[in-house]
Length: 306
Image (tube, rainbow, N blue to C red):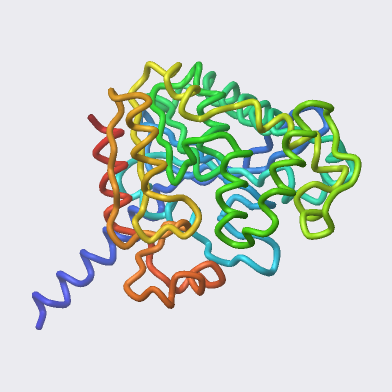
């Protein structure tokens, strides 16, 4: 019993010591008037640093969106990857910070790229880290591609392989095929004239006046073509339970840049959770109770430490 008590004491001491060595910093990245507050966490210096690049929506640094999406997947990822001696930084996307709301009118897709570049510039001068890795999740996959000039490794996580106009046509055609002709007409008009005069009421959530410049800006980029321009180590990951981005997208990205590494993770969905039952897939967006994919963390840690 005495030996068991001693072992338990030593184990608890080791855990407490490890926790006391965690460095957590609140960092504010600014892009003109835009504020991008974030959290940096690491155990020790001279380790690699991941900068997380968000998908679409008003996502905060932890992977949540207001009072609706509560998957907490970015925080879960951060806590897991830190245990692999890899530092991690994520920030509140400009659309999730209420201090930015008065500056968001006229925001373009490339403004997200500009925000990310400010974050990269900040850490390029920080000598505590051995290298910088971008992980672009979903929409962030393309954003990270476009900002990858001054980093060391690039990871595409559930990223599309085609431009957003083609993605929209594919998605609408699956959900509401009767709207597909109207969508194609709107996209054509937007590309040719820079605006859509009369938007179909069922497509107004996509193409209201405020969104049109954003989508026009986004449509000019083809992820498969942009990936060809990247000459640093590339890892492409997708889960086979992803309801938003198909495994075929990851395969097509890999074909676009064959030097990349492709990994398809069994049972992982779009918010990086391990899904055993299909009926749990959507539920995992609204709660943090589902576990993050262990295979995801292992795959990324091996890639970074090569």
